[in-house]
Image (cartoon, rainbow, N blue to C red; front, side, top):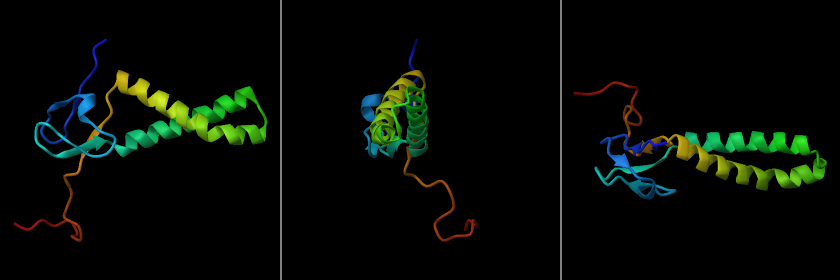
Length: 111
């Protein structure tokens, strides 16, 4: 199975995983700051949280042990899920270039 490359949203350069850092990093093609979209990371965390609750419910260790294990299990499942889903489909990349109206405007563009 061939991995799909991550693509810069500005110049459409194919990015390798080593080019993307956890925080903002520069695109080798255009120099724009890029990172993995926050929505993708948050989605992985919520899925990990739900899976951890489901797993703890199925095991049934008791309420206090479940509460104690919920956070570490959520982090572990989220990391494993993030790695697995990044192999199957590349995460969305976002840039720091604003594409909407300027801050403070009501949407009208001056020419």
